Amino acid sequence: MQIYVVDDDSDLRKSVSISLKAAGFSVQSFATADAFISVANDLTPGCVLLDYCMPGLDGFEAQRLLQFSDSLHRIILCTGVGEIPEAVRAMRAGAVDVLAKPYRRGELLDAIARAGAELEKLISSRSVPTAS
Image 1 (cartoon, helix red, strand yellow):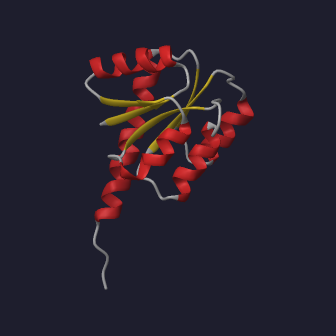
Image 2: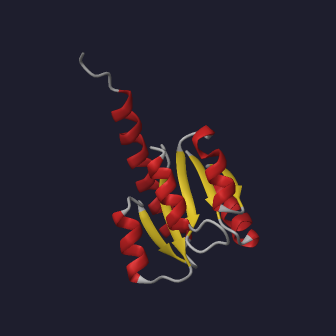
Image 3: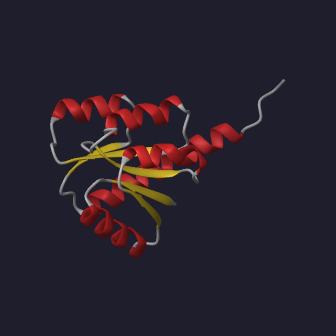
């Protein structure tokens, strides 16, 4: 499965990318939500590890834009804040999970597995021909 790491923290992007590549995932990273959103619809469907608090477009706004564009990406919102209202808001808006930083590798891999299952269902539901 394709994973997109969207976080303004370059050390975190690098370490998460290395860890996920070692686990067998294809990983592409972006330093800003703006950079990711500008190309998201041209990318392979996948799981987006999306930081909540970034300069420019924040994670919630990026999530909203992806949903508005009917994107085939499943979102795991990551936050250093870890506040319950933000987590509830993200989940209600369709995030697969919300992870508080620093998250454990197992916690991340579990969330990615759930995102992958949701993505498979979404893709298969869109590829089913409808009766005319």
